[in-house]
Image 1 (cartoon, rainbow, N blue to C red):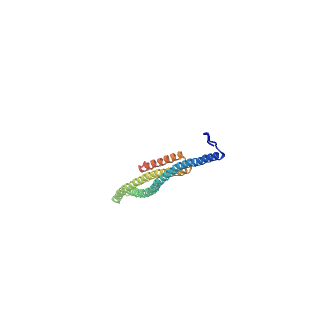
Image 2 (image 1 turned 90 degrees about the horizontal axis):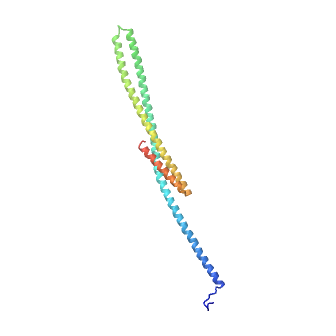
Length: 211
């Protein structure tokens, strides 16, 4: 009734106002939650893309490092085998040298026993054995030097192999942390992931520089 400027609310007016507020709250509440969920999904999607890209790059680099690790290990074994062959050949030469020394000693003994007869023959034999021993000794020393070079090259390859293996291991652990970070959404795991990947890259550079 509004004859004197007053408006009296009936029961239906209160119900209408209550329904209006309810509808407004219903629209406001889910709308706010939707925006929040949207922001969360956007943030999570960005992290997923970031980790996926990181994993792809690190896995590729890790595959290269793994190949280099295997190659250097194979080279180290090959060089060590070459060193062993040279050492065996040098040993054979020294045995040959000892045999010539024995024959020279016999010739010198015969020279003392037969000073008047066959002297020139035994002197010639002694001279020949000395010359042959010098050549044999030179060859044996050459083979020993080659064996040493092969051993050194093998040691260098083994050192590189260890470097490549260390770098590969760091990258593998980094990839594992990436998976855990993606599941747990922990930011500190992402930092650890990046730190390990950087460490692996540094060790890989050291391997390339033979350090």
